[in-house]
Length: 430
Image (cartoon, rainbow, N blue to C red):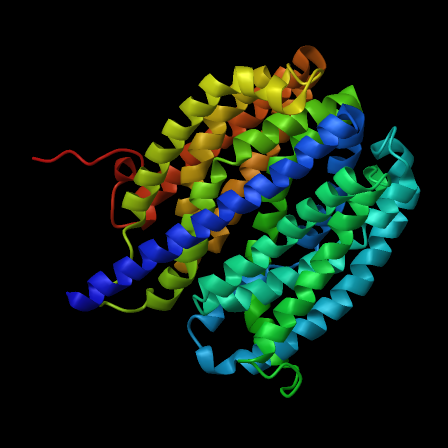
């Protein structure tokens, strides 16, 4: 019993630490958005958002789920860290070269159509972020798998903190703050974080002593490719609305939409913190019958309750908060926020359940559900944006998020020990 209590206490501490980091990180990212919105305007904010979306999409598109596979297998075979890193690093180098080349060709051919109003040289520069994003995600996977959340959270926090501090310094004490300067910071600071991460990782893992392992690569890809496709679809689900708003309504509307998305997605800090901590713990204990597995149903239920309360507070405060924070021209973001909130809340519970499926090696279910949600979100946005504008995009996305939880609960009933209703409300006591 004491062992169980210690593990539960450690889990709560890790979740609290991760959540605190999420808050500080979110405030830093929000500070950058506020700075651009107030100093430069909605058009520049739209350009900034679209420029950084592409390398983020690339990191998901070419990541092949290797980082998730590393967390899964490092939690189960801890003595193979050096081999796993050697294999991962060589994969990252090859993927970065090939992926960047494909992206440059893609922008050259389709850039004028997809990125209307945005200078293509800005898009090209943003692509430099791709290798750093890929490298950092795999470095962080090692610390997450080891449940070293102190180092994990510190490395995640450094990038947004430095970007905001340097941008504020440039704004207050110099005359060269501009959109290009902000993009420059956001692209290059992650490389500094990657260097710090490698230095820290080298203290416990020999980085260049082990050999590339074809056997581990096959093992990782057998698990990771399913996660990979799901991650691509998930990122598209959360960003396809922004891309379609930019396509149908232009960069200024994309800037307004970005404000609503950034505010509502802060609610996901709660589910993110729980997911980051729970996944390696569930993966490590999945085959043990020692009663140490965490009740995911209870976590899902509590997460849903807390995010619901936070969303109500945001809905009440948002009407006055948005004009104060972002200035004139962003008032419509409040109505977009109201349409987004229900789906954002429900999707937070879906994220917790998805980690339970992944830890049980049921990643194929996550993939199916994510692909269905992506198709639904795309269709809803195509139908609603031309007729209802920004509100149509928000309602379409919220509806797709809601369907995701509904379908996931159906699978919960078939594969998990607790019934679906325990994941969304307190079980009835008899």
